[in-house]
Image 1 (cartoon, rainbow, N blue to C red):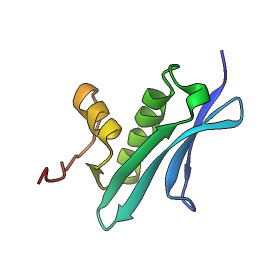
Image 2 (image 1 turned 180 degrees about the vertical axis):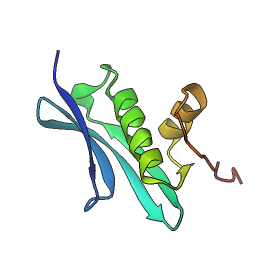
Image 3 (image 1 turned 90 degrees about the vertical axis):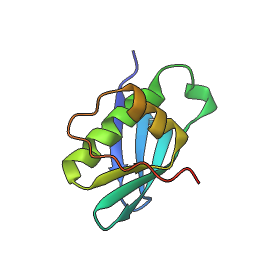
Image 4 (image 1 turned 90 degrees about the horizontal axis):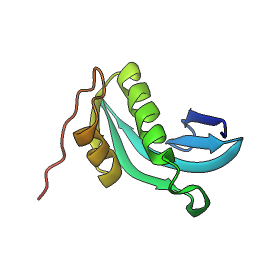
Length: 98
């Protein structure tokens, strides 16, 4: 089983997931006063089908909750994750669909 680590890369404004030290995917975010906007999530084709996106989303959202602020899911994957998983302490503001 590969070692998975999720870290926040503030310089690149994204959370990164590494599999045995290799960058396997990321979730882009934008910090705004009082909120964190998730804008895009991507897992490298070589790592797809292993559940890494779910691990990345869970860890990124847990960190976002811990750092404070409202989560705004513009990324379809993060929005779907929030609708199907409990994220303890998360305050979510859904972006307008129009």
